[in-house]
Length: 176
Image (cartoon, rainbow, N blue to C red; front, top):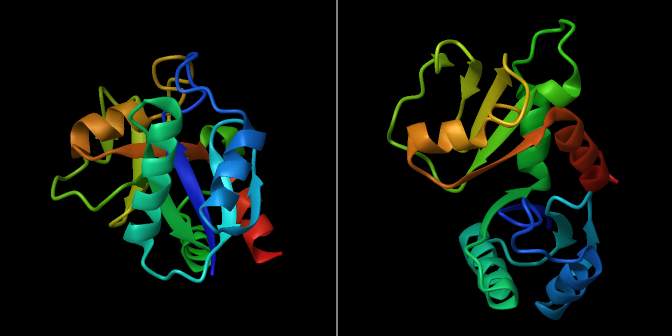
């Protein structure tokens, strides 16, 4: 099966720095095939016969935390998951650029509600599934440029966020 591992908390703000070549080598060492990375922010595409996603994510987390001494969380999605995300996306066909449309990946489902708008309307939540939140921030910059911190604080689960350009590029690579 083909997967993507979205890594939370690597190569951000000078913490948990991992060279992509080292990351690919480490994932190959776990027995994964066709390992590639996409951009420096921690997106690893690979193949594995393992179908238990929780087991795969835990294996990658253990390896990464041993490499960095950090607290890295993995949000794993299959090729089918990524295609579902692209096919079901709720973004309106407006002028919002793809790099201002976000998908926040949840480590596990949350039992908390996320309001449609949060923090004085700064973040518009378009859709929430068990494992993803689709949103558009209305303040783009250091505070809300990526809505993961805000969503994580509201849902009380570990998350990582990617913009729509990255999501679609990874989905295309997994399909190829």
